[in-house]
Image (tube, rainbow, N blue to C red; front, top):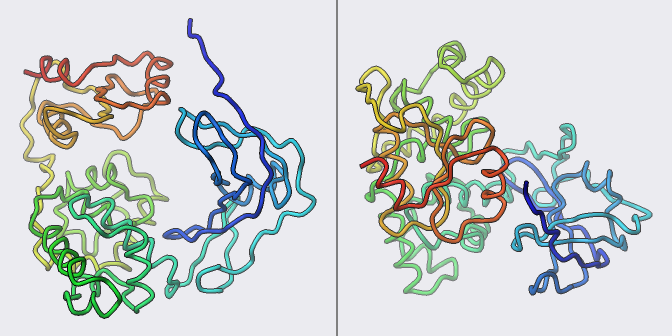
Length: 349
């Protein structure tokens, strides 16, 4: 049995819907009259996609009820008064090109969209995870000054950054962080996942790189990808096409000499029998003795399968500090074994 407590709800009125441009999709953010929810002042709520707004009648002047999911994320619960009119954009707010409707989603397919360019640069540094200072504001400034590709970003000097309006100290630090991103060790699957190829996130990148080195992906066919367990025909076609389209950038970035930790090839792996061999493991929260990446590498060495999130196939959740209630609830719901960081190391050692 489980006792569920409903988080405290609050009510507010929608001021406006702001549409933000991601790497591909244009998604709504619901701006509301500021309201106190579970001890925090909330003024924005995610709108998910155009289909969600239409289904729930969310537009200007709509009255909604919201909570902070897990006492963190502002979340729409219900609509108390539907909006009389829901305005769905027909053109991209960043580049004004006509949007494409794909089910519930709006997509910008323009190759020259500045909004997408900033998101792609930000996504690169976020997934790579070994450089600071390249947050949304920095990426926006870069794009405003015509720096719209990864190749251009890595060509910038301290003088170039100063010319964009950054201070002398920050400009020097930006150059240091670019160098750090190349010289500090980073897993090859993170580098591949950082290019933002649809259907090729970090998990599937690792899966692909267990069979091919990253430099050998040039010209890879859909049939070769589909032959790998876990890839279907549709995603294989998509990944093969996008790798070919993006290879000039991918090849250029590889040529910059990133300090890559290579994923062990399946053909070279030594079969290891351990207490976690074959187990699906999720690592979450802040670790004290080491990083989550260190723990994932150890799990892989011992034949386990690290996952990004808890699902019905998860066997073990290793929880550090400040773990969200949502993940713990999901683990309990699926009967997942929950271990602390210390218990995990004691188990594998």
